[in-house]
Length: 235
View: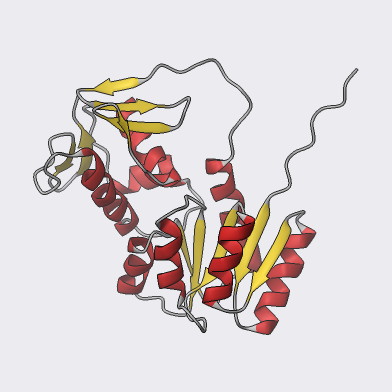
């Protein structure tokens, strides 16, 4: 009998200029079975990410060369690599700026290694293809198509560039058209119960999706706000 295929080894790039923290992260990630790449400067991290194509990037905001926010923006122009930002700036405005730059998650310092590892596992689960399943039907809403099998969103037949978490959010809405969900319900269903980010995360991702799927994002016809309640997706 053939041996079951081994689980793929994920590669994590850590961009951090604090030598002690970088060593700690590298040690703990390697112990979990990850292949670890490192960089201490933003420009070096950007180069390594583009050359080595890691499965996930852990990126400090306050780094020399190019700061983490700018690195995140530059990576988002040509890659969908999941990005977790690390920062000592824990205010809501800082978190929103990090998410607006294209990050998938945001961890404020100081943080526990177990928490960060859990977030890495959760994010990798969302972007790692699962075992083949029966083909899922494409969900169509006018010119918008959500293809669960290909993990693609198309508008008027043209594929849209959506981040993994944007796709998960839109798929959730498309699978429950016409139902109103609160921000807290959406966080639980899409991000998971272990996600520590606030409800503003939902608002940011909804805004991104509207910019991609709506003819007039300022007056959305599909992804609508239910005033005082949350959001719903119209058929």
